Length: 155
Image (cartoon, rainbow, N blue to C red; front, side):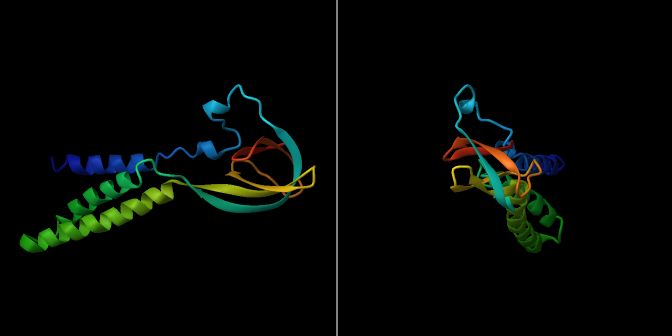
């Protein structure tokens, strides 16, 4: 059983890094957007800033924290004996929980563009989407969708 625990913990931590960040891409549509009309407007990028999108963890960082606690507890259990071993196990589990949660947070982060776009109508809009394309200030773009569901594509 002791040999299986590290494998289980590593598997849990690996799953924590499986957040689906592709939904933040301008090239990915949700199923509800398929076969629906989308509004298209045109504009020019006036400002670009690289930002990070923090994906929501469906488990609320439980997987990373739990996996970290198991690994930390196992490592702490290797230290000392008696009550010292129990203290090291507890400290390892607490430290592992914190570290596992932070690792899961980092795995659920993706690089994105914050694009300020001046529409041909004269107003400006800011759209944030995954940085999977090379956009440049002055580039003409299409804005697809409206409100909370808008993506930017080259023109």
